[in-house]
Length: 331
Figure 1 (cartoon, one colour):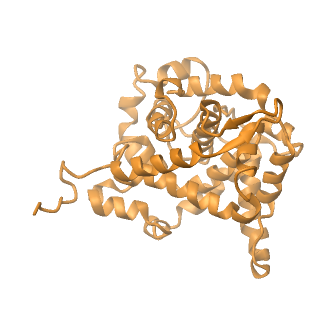
Figure 2 (cartoon, rainbow, N blue to C red):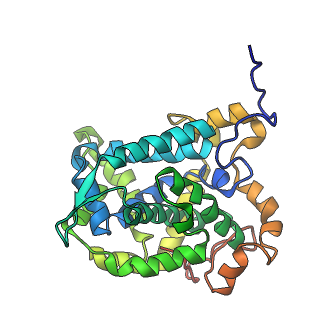
């Protein structure tokens, strides 16, 4: 009988990303929940993608289930073993192969696993995770932001995309959004998603908590969208400086909750990963600061992004701009 692998040994399966990756550190941040809601808002503006959701599921009755399943997929692919991540990807691909959607323009039935739709969903997620977490004060250099986008090409492969077709840095991600923007629209399905996210159905006893807690989180996620998304939805948002202040305040508050408490939420992917790999694998933004000088030396993947004038943050000297400063990220 083979001996059990010891945590910290070189033979332990650290998953697709591993503790040295930007993804490993960033996905442990509590602002990922608000980032996930922003991603839903953004994804719903693609007419065909949002139809794929509303035509193939009872979004009104199972919206919470969809949110949880998405969160579990991200957690599994980030902190699970390689086998678990590949298995999760295979499940997603299998489901998508069986589903189709009617194109609102041509009336033709199309598969929901078409690359165009999968790429939109992927890019909206990655851009939203990066934007919200970074803008809320999580320390990332420009090079580390590029590394995050590049690392998650593997996530795109899991859902069925050809890695060669997926943006691998922030400049490519920004170019993708510029290209796809003319296709976005405020459809009846997008308004349906908007209405749900603003006031999701809950038990009567939970309505006050929904207004006080969820309402604020959803409003902050919406406010962090790019201006063109606000225009399409037809709802105003606070000034960018106000949004940045609120994101940073919310980030500070949520990060005051001890990680071990936050990580107790089911299904405890991070705790299981730390138990499997060892205590040195605990996600922490401070580990990224140690690597910042190497990644942001000027020769790394962030150099082209900085030259293009897309700004961000990282470390003490590279934190996101103070409220009122310039903030531009893809998507």
